[in-house]
Image 1 (cartoon, helix red, strand yellow):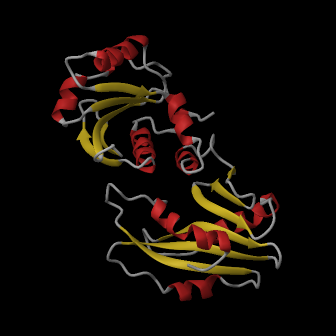
Image 2: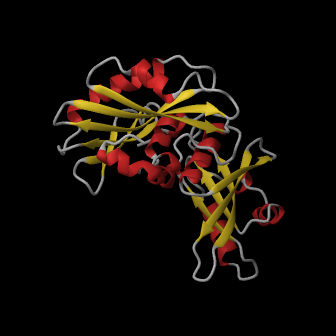
Length: 291
């Protein structure tokens, strides 16, 4: 189980965790500014596929971090939900808590949803629901970033192919593919070594490397490492992909495929593991071909 006491006591980690989780679920997420209790509300835009046209729903997300005290969220912890949703032009409200809502809060949210005089939907995510949402191949790296103790270690998810897996380790999200074999456990220590090598490589501030996939040619004993160089918007990388590949290729059985990625860290849509970095290259990842 995840230990929510690992999150910062001021609640900012919980807010950021929820923001990252919603983004991974395909929402567009914005900060609405700090509320009376010092916390920041989130505005989450959910786009759904309708029968005749896309449907957009706006959610007001309010986070209440109670894990340190272990207490439930009470009525006094909430503001006027209907007024807040009206202020932000939202169709729904979600209370997110690192513990659980009290029975009176749960009843209040249910009564708002069941009120025929208002179109609002009100619900909640408690600690159990947050953990359930995080325990997926796509989201467990988020858990590892925010819960370095209780979510530590390897988490490997199988795919529909016996030689392809999705892995989370130390907050990294990446794919692992064998050319033939149906087991990757035997060389996890090699991947750990490569991640350490990536982390130790010196780069300018806000420049960083991100492992995307590993292909192991178990017929010849060679690895192909797919790595992105994340470069801040309008800044120059330290070198070309070819330069980086030369810097890393010091063993005969390790080959590298680098790509330069420009990112805007201040954007509400930025995520270091956005699906665009993976989905369009899945064919190359699986076949062991360079991007």
